[in-house]
Length: 115
Image (cartoon, rainbow, N blue to C red; front, side, top):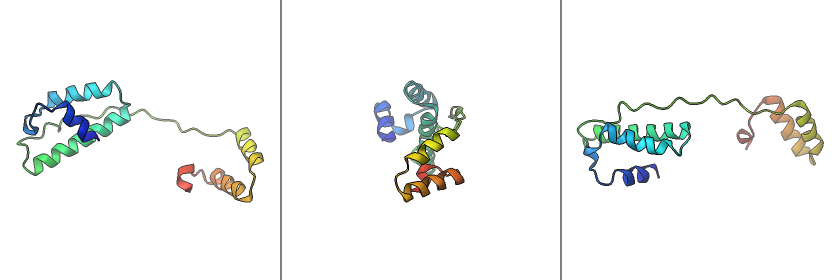
């Protein structure tokens, strides 16, 4: 998908005609609608693509070498207060639910890591 978006933006150029200013212009447009983490992923994709193209001889130089990723925001994890945990314990309807809740709470494991 990212490749398709990039190709649509640079359709009038051959791969070896893509320069750093062209890539920066593309990324400025993308930054208007993407979070910094998604923009960073897009930049890593572009660097990887052009590194491959350079190593395989498709382009004479790698225009993406100087692209920098945006600073990522530090996210504070969400957590439950003791009152929320008590309400969850009360709402457990089966032994399995109760065991699962106890496991999550006592280990600090994320819900996605349990499944």
